[in-house]
Image 1 (cartoon, rainbow, N blue to C red):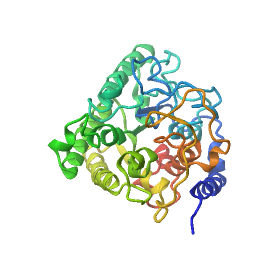
Image 2 (tube, rainbow, N blue to C red; image 1 turned 120 degrees about the horizontal axis):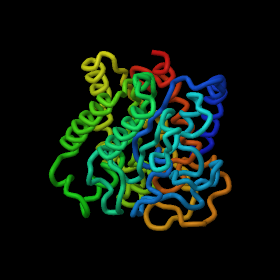
Image 3 (tube, helix red, strand yellow; image 1 turned 45 degrees about the vertical axis):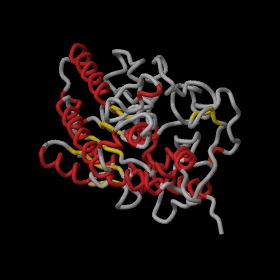
Image 4 (cartoon, rainbow, N blue to C red; image 1 turned 30 degrees about the horizontal axis):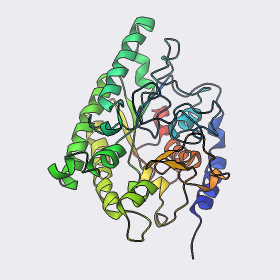
Length: 353
């Protein structure tokens, strides 16, 4: 018998929202500011003016977002958007491309669709802002804050969200026709090379004032319609080889978090188990159709009509989650529903320590 994962997800989200409804309304933000780093999963429009194919600033993207198409790669809010609401911010954190001096004291979104931990990741589709470039942009923000406020010690109380790494597989390692990494490294070696570079970048973020840092693990990319269609799955719902590769990287998160927290005694790094949240144990076999017509391998056709019941779809295009999936991720990242959702803290706990 088949199962409707979209229905399961809808019921799950409604249950979680009822559980967390007291956190959504807050008189004031629980932290002074909120900074977002990552790729298209949390991009809010930083790619709009770049010379790139990594764009989503046109309909039907944003069909359920209050401001319409903004550059978010989904139909509504991203997981980072919803976490910001759970944190009590009354508006969405501005993208770095549009942030004013008045904005930056409450936070900035640096994320960029198509980017990765590695600088070359995603380059076949044009410009994108790699994590190294995002960190340089954050340095510029801190410099602006120093000129405006002089005292930036409040940054230690802020929440930092980092959601990146999927493109280092989808648009690098698993694309041998464009990139050489799969010929240079075994899957285990690549996971180690990637985590080592990531660890240096996170230490840079610490040096720029970050102390409460939530690291989002990679989802099961082998279950995305993009990779199922591209690589084939022998009739199974997911591409096992792709998920196996990503799991080698995800397995290194907890040891990295432990290492960083031990090394930086005043820091609170934490791991958010995105794969476990979006694909609960035993549920990875459930698949729902994507919600928009495609142009190319992943993106929605401009001005096309999306599916009418978007709450029944796990994915909006062939790669990016629908708003409903993003809400599921965000609610359990903010307040863990299961012990496996976050380690060693959920984001709500981060605000209190």
